[in-house]
Length: 311
Image 1 (cartoon, rainbow, N blue to C red):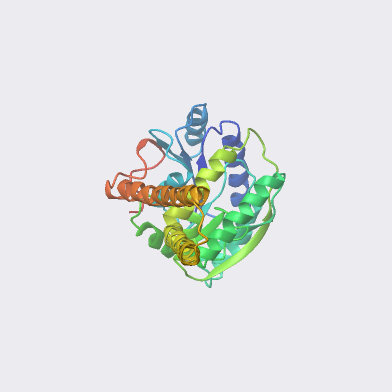
Image 2 (spheres, helix red, strand yellow; image 1 turned 30 degrees about the horizontal axis):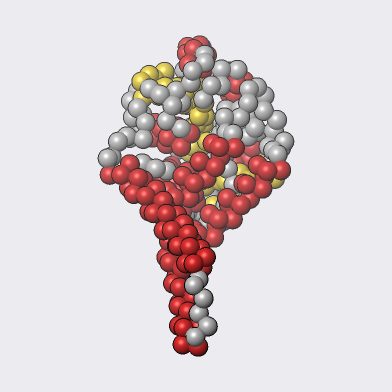
């Protein structure tokens, strides 16, 4: 059986479209399936639409969060409650074309693949700034983690053993795209063109994307912490150079008062110290979040499913 996991946040118009398109497609190819919508604390009529869909088809299931916990939490809630032998994560706005699921499923059926990753061939109507930020983000991730993630997305098919490997990872601050690559297993890629959004607007503005990038990088790698060491080394080298220069001028009797130089050095040093403390403080905040061991999400309602279907 194939479990299709669909995070949804304020997608009242897209939920029926996604359910209809995916159901018809999988039925036409005689694939046994379940569709699990994760209502991530929507403030519109998303849950009401899901209730209507679940009442008309028992294969359409839904989980409702008590509030908005974010897409990462929604993905893991779907994985933890899926009963399928394989799971597909797909966006609710249908920018991930459902037809690609069939290609992914057939690759998985060969038995030689554990993870099928759908990569973006084209990025649709994204702005130049958005596209540039995305490329920079993936270059940074690739450099600090060694994982090839260019043009990757959350649109993936995972075999049950890959899902179980992910669920054994206990961290609360998750980055699904990187974690699903980190677990290894045999992986194949398919490519898709990002479709035009059917309804509504993207929930990721510029500020949200920057926040997502910072959170993802810091939750998956400690590389930014190394910037503190690098800054310290650079400051030390500058201090040595200025120190030698000051001593030479003093010995030769040509030393000036140097008030401006001292102020400049203090400003540079203070900026580096504050920047370094900011990075360390951010990681301490993340450690604080982890050690509290709060759940990734809280489920308030379920439709057509029992608690912990598989686990």
